[in-house]
Amino acid sequence: MNFNSKITLALFLSLITLLGACGSSDDLNGKKENSDAFGKDNSNGSGKDGKKGSKTGEYALSVKLTPFIPDYPDLGASGKQLLATRLNAAVAKVGYGGDGANPRFIIGPDINLLSKNVTGTAPTKYANTYEVTLMTCDVASETVFATYSFQVKGVGDSPAKAFINAFRDYNFDNDDFYKFLQESEKKILAYYEDNCDKFLQEAESQSKLRNFDAAFTIVNNIPMEAENCFKKVASKKDEFFQQSLNTNCQTVLASMKAELGKANDPSASGFNESAMAYYKMIDRQSSCFAETEKIYQDYLRKLKPEAKRDWDFQMQQYQDKIKKIERDDEFRRDSTMENFSYLKHKDEMQAKAEIEGNKKLLQKYQYDQLPWLRKVFHLGKHDPFDGIDK
Image (cartoon, rainbow, N blue to C red; front, side, top):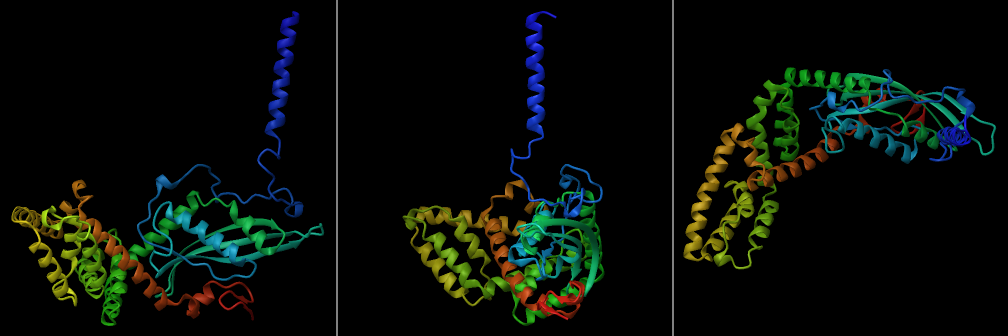
């Protein structure tokens, strides 16, 4: 081997050694708090199958689930928020979650502290092992649909920090978790089909109490995958939504006036689709219809003759399109309808009604006051609902 070859080989070996050292360094990306209290196996894993890579493309969820986290000891406010956020994010990847989801169907954890090891180091460390069983439940019928269990381990300066560290790195993106959601959905869809009349009765009861937002939300939460029930409640969904609009007609009217007010010169302005979208949502039976009609007619009188003729023509076309949408679902789903102002503003008002409906249903169900739920989400002698050791 000549001198140049020796130099090249030496440089190559040096580079290999340097890369190996970099690959084993714990300091490049910062060290994670760890402890020998658990022995060699201190991983939280990513579900029973242990497979890596996103699974979300293989699964889809149509039912809505509301995350529910009781006040377990050692969680603390930060731990509770972390678990709620992680759980909501995991569900939302393949379906619908969050506080805007269905308050009746919840997903929540039953947490058991398997071991609690306080180290003799300075500062003191808490090395805890938790068993977590996620459950999907119907709080109204006291039904558990499915469960999913796993263990996590965490080390921290306090029990709350140990819990946060345990959950921070747990990977919900695995087959077993998504199959748990699918099994839950399968049973919930069957429950909708078998108990459709009960959902309608609940909605009717809310309607009689003039809680039209809640009535609308109950039937609106029924997914189209529950085909028979979805068809059965379709007309009632429209009825409850219109009742909600009638009750909140001043809000709709304010939106209409705001849109009409955007025209710099009303006398020569063109057809105002956004304003007319709100106008068409105000029913003749609503308390503010007379005021609405007066404002509308006053606006038309300000138009110049040519602008008035153009307005009347476009208004007729606009009304014909709305009628066709209301009676033809296929036409409604056409891609050309995506930016139609009436549908956009109607969806906006439906979303507002659902938010208000969810608030009222949350008040109705009162999770913390349900004896059955207190038994399901319980930790030993500690009652997570009132924080009292029994």
